[in-house]
Image (cartoon, rainbow, N blue to C red; front, side, top):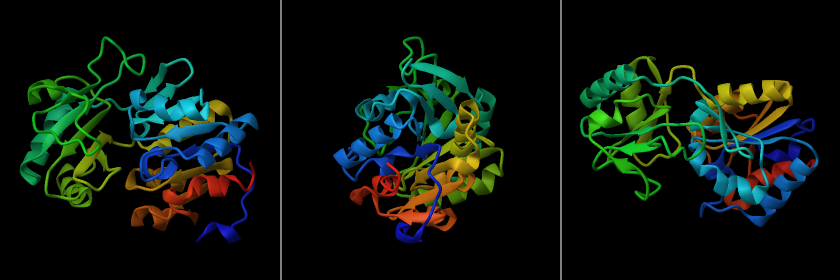
Length: 278
């Protein structure tokens, strides 16, 4: 349902996905969104970024919003403290044996895939860690401007917080269905874009588990949390939160689970909801 007829108690913690939710279609923050998020934090309410993004992609969003607290990264695998540039917790590392088994199964189910591994150190850009390692011909829908190219053995040879699988010519939805048939719950599969990229995490690690950890650290009960999202990797988070809000531009899975549907990200849907209280 759209927001005009929804009555919700003022939240004690606000969580938002980034891409397709907090950012507009041109991947930028609007002044309206910046202003309302600053009012939220000035009121003493934590505002938590909960994203599939790795920690090193958080600062460009957090800085204009004046956020210094927690961010949930890599779909729940990493808890990052923005102000201190510190990795606070890592959950569900994918060990090399599991990475190799996963890729072996996917090569049979989805021939032609290319792989990348996301790793984490002690800070967002740890000089001692190769944060993002990609196989030759790996296609990044956000642009191929980063990533250290390496043979597959190197991509899979170290623990990772996330395995990314790209395949040209298929949608992420199609890829996820095929991958789930062969991986059978050994890992969790999701996606944050429908352009031929799926993401693999350790089983049971989601944005919901990451956000629940933040809420526990801050002493906020889940029923007083409001969360915003637009893609399948947001479903568990919206379902966990006391009030889950989907963007009108969101995937059908997200629209189905949400308590409320707000305006699309092109119309500052997050800000429209938060302006009820702030």
